[in-house]
Amino acid sequence: MKLFTEYVLPQFKNANKITIIKEDAFEYARKHICPGKYDYVFTDLWHDVSDGIDLYLKMKQYEKQSPQTVFSYWIEKSILCYL
Image (spheres, rainbow, N blue to C red):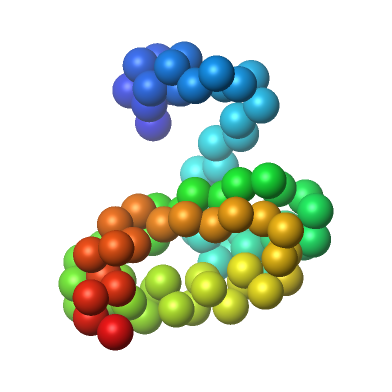
């Protein structure tokens, strides 16, 4: 995370508006995802091809709680080929 905060985050136009949350994605979503709270959510929950699709589909259920939020996932396109 230190590398991201030092080198990647400063490259974003609105870096001051970005909040990085390092927590279990499902636990956080269960407690905090609600309509209108976030503009964009990027979730890194992929471990490998054996669990990626299951975790992706599980998190997709939380998207329904916040339909105005844009969600994206680490390596999403590569795991979608398994559907």
